[in-house]
Structure formats: structure tokens, C-alpha cells
Image (cartoon, rainbow over all chains, first blue to last red; front, side, top):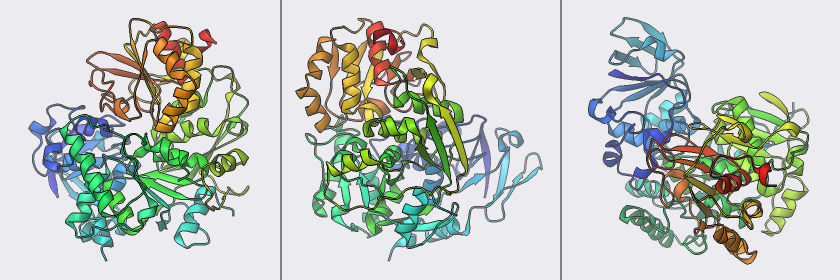
Length: 159
Length: 420
């Protein structure tokens, strides 16, 4: 998958920032998407294009269990989040939705805003097409790809 | 090699004799709790996939608490979808407004949480229930849908961080101060993916209610769950609420821990976490001159009867500063009634606090206590992220009910020992 990077160098970007609680009165992905990342970057929704990638520091998605955080950024067009590390529930929600997340240490040092990235999820290779640099990461476990291939956790357990 | 209490519960619920950290297992769930924000999406997912069933109506407990009584049409629609689903599936364990409360207060209060059980809910503070020796963790809506449908979920067995709390707590120092100090030490991702197991003489001496405050906040250190080995206080608390059988698991002396942290709590002082992270703790006496616009006493962290008694003890015969407003929210209907009977409402009202019905409301910037641009709030809640209680340009400071009451009287962040 290819996309342009939106880099947030901060650690601990939390779910309240990704989708503030004032919008949790709906679970419509398209409505939530209008407010994605609103409390960290008001301009995000205007500048994000389909297929783009969010790049951030440690502990991305900490805080609330709200899956609305995944739906909001996915709805806004984000195809993948790459971070030093993820908060547990956000990471789990991503796997259950078949939404790609990549843990890659030091990522914010190697990627600048607007860089074009080519991500090979299963191989664990991330190419920065703008700088020519290649990075390796540990791919998600097969178990997670199994859920993604089924179309999500619910589809995978449907009997 | 022995096992921790968390490993034992997960092994017992997944048909294994032993489990080890890192293992992926499928665990059976004893209680699935549902509230009004994360459950309606789960219900829709199940309907859309033609999976609209519940694994066991008597194991599902539904407690609308975030936006009820409803604050607007959209939240009313969410609550309506929840109600219709409850009726469709004959779920009896439904707590309508009038008997409800913050789910993490109601669940243990009504005997749903027992030692050795597995408990999940689409809410990050589900870790609260580990105080009774249960494995409990917060999940998202897809997980919740899977739990409702199948009664089981996949888990990666967490590593355990053991926190040994030694010494004794001084006057005016509470379990909220202890957990704020722990998060200050290890950071907001200090226990990422782990189970935090609290032990030691300080924990032994805490009431069960005070223990909930600590396990409630382990998610603020990134943990999957918090847990306390059951003791006689736990058993007594549970026995007063249910006749159901349960199994008590405890950690083996030779259990393997990823990390052990020992803290002497004897010198600990009342703490305040500054914006915008729960790890920004410092002693209240060193807070400097921080005038606040609002004080909030309530939530799944500190809205229990013991918390209200502590706050009322300081507010009795006094008035809050006329430079702020103070909102008191008993965490459940039972707590609300108990506070009423004990005359606490009279104390709060005489001090010019407002007392609300139970709700999560202001804790997450929902309603009834929203902060405006530039406003500051000293809150007994668990999270002080940017925009948590309203405007992204407001500030939330976290403290104990005692610190909150003292701050309400003084008009600025104040060490509660000044009023003891």
C-alpha cells in the first residue's frame, strides 16, 4: 500500500484527540470522519487524502476504548497508522477491524510530513519513496492477518 | 514455575492447565457489560452480519450511563437502540435511569463481579473490577459484538507487573494519591499491555472501595488489567452482594513477574496530576497558585460512598469559594440514596455544591459540567487529556475527593491536610 505521511512527532496521542467524546453520539463512520484528529490538528480532515498514512510516536491511541477512533480516521481516508508503539485497546480494535497498524521504532525520525510511503505489511518492509530509505518492522502475527482476510473479527467467528 | 492470579484465571477460562505471557488464547467470558456509547455500534454490526443473537441473556448486564438521562436527540437514539435490543433478546439485567449508575460502580455493587471471573465491557475503565480478584479489561465495539455473540474472546496473556506498596498512608492521603504517584513513576505507558498486580500492607489496609480507585486507573498506565489477590475483605464484600459460587485464585509465591516495583507509601503526600497527562503528578502542596473554575467530585474513579463521605467531611460547615462551582455526582443510584440518608446532600448543598443524578457526564466532556475555553477543573476523575472535559483549551487537574473538597473551599488547588 502507498500513501503520503501525516507526521505527528508526539507520544501519547489519545483517543480523545483522535475523536473527541462530544461526537460519540453517533457511530456513523462518515459523520465521525468529519472530526478525525480534530483536537490535535483542526486542519487534518481538510488535508488528508484517501490512502494517506498517519505517523506518530509512542503509545498512539491511548485512553478510551472507543472504536470510533479507528472509524473516524479510516472514514477520513487513512489507510494505515505507523507508530513507535500503540496503546493496547486501539491496537486490538485495529486488528479486529482489519485496519493496518505498524509498530516501527524511530519512525518519526525517518519520515517527514508529505513523504510518500510504500508499506509491505506481510513482509515487514516500509520504503520511504521520497528519501529512498527502507525500514524493517515486525509484521502483525498471522492470527491478525487471518482476521483481516476474513473481513474482521466478527466475520472470522461467524458460524 | 508458578502462575500469577491473572494467568490462573485465563488458564481456567480457556481450558488450559497453564498459560504463559504472550500466548494467544480464547477465553470464556462470565460477564459482558454494555453501556450506551460502545454497545449500539456492536448491535448494528451483529444485525448487519445476520449474527443478531446473544450467547446468554443472563450473563449480559446493560447499564446506560454515559449520556443518560439523554442530553440530545442523537444520544436519545443511541439509548433507544440499546433499549430495543434489550427487549428483543429478553435481557433482564437492564438498569434504566432511576436505578442505574456509572457501570463500573453498579457492576460490583450488585454482585456481578466475583473473584475468579472474567469481565469485559466496551469501556477502558473496565479494569476497575480487578480489585475483586477478577480478570477484567476494556474492549472496543467489535470485541463487544463478538463477546455478546459468542461469550468468548481472544486474548494475549499479559505479562504481570507486581507493585508492592509498603508502609502506611498518612492523614489526608488516599488510594487516589497512591495510584497517581505510581503513574507518575512509571508513565502513561509504563505498564503497556501488562496486568498490574497490587499487593503489600498498604493494599491490605485499604477498603474494597478504595482499591477500586487504584485498579480503575491502571489503563492510565497503559495496562490491560489491574488486579488484587482476594482477601477476607474481598470475600466479605462479595458475600454481602451475592450467594453465587466462585473460585478464588491467588498468585503463587514463585509466579513469574515481568517487573516488580516496591514503593514505600509512608512519605506520600496528597497528589495532583497536572494537565494533560495522568502522569504529570506532583504534591498538592507544591501545586503553586492554581485558581480553578470548577471542582468535580464523582465518576467510576471516585464517586463511591466512601469518597462522598470524605468530601462531605471537609465541606461540612463550610462554603465553597464563590469563584468556582462544585459538582457532586454519586456514581450509582444506591450510592445516591445512601448519601441522601446520611445527610450528605444537605452538607453539599449548604456548601453551595450542586448534586446530580448518577452519570458519566462531565468526566468525558459529555454533558453537565463541560468546561469553556481557558477554564480549569480539579476533578476526581481518571483522565486529564486535552479537551477531556470540554474545550480543547480547558485544563483538567486530577486529585482525590479530599483534595477536591479542599480546593473547592479555597478556590485554588489546595492540600486537603489544611482542612483536617
